[in-house]
Image 1: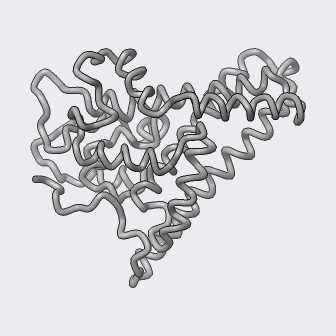
Image 2: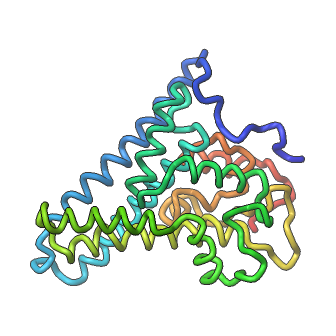
Image 3: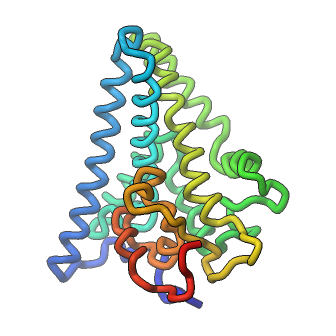
Length: 263
């Protein structure tokens, strides 16, 4: 099987013996901290904006910007699941993953990690929690089936409490909370599903052509980043799961599958 000798993640916590490996590890940590910091700073600014004074055309742009940063949070958590955020320090790596998924939508990191391992072991199958159940193949119904695996009363309750505390005690306008805190992660989840799951794991008329049951989108590097932090380079991700999202474009241009072409 192609890539069968590649482990699910980096050997997190293993000793690093080369300067280049250490540099890559530090780069992963710097990228993660930058995304978290940018998301937090942007959210604080947007929550305290007087949106009544802003032109109407600017609000959708700010909303999409915050959505993009939420997707960055999840991309960071995803890298942590593969040990790519901080390969030299297992605790720090998984701590960052825990923080980012909680900030994203109060998800439990260990729960997502367990499901993601199943996804990699049994991609696009009945044992894959991210795959449809054979009935919900349409993107809309597949998305809701997909979200039922991760969304529940726990998330709703915690987010409702945070919303009420922010509104009543921090005096953040409800409109700002809905526009920049409630809506962006919802849109981000649609973005992640469509570009990172539906397009990359749906079965074509010719069937699956590789053991990972994954395909790579034909977006350029720029649009791959804009659409979903290179989640569209999905066959490369399954082949090299230890690579961080920002390393996938380099793998995309390696001729690993001579007969693949753009799918």
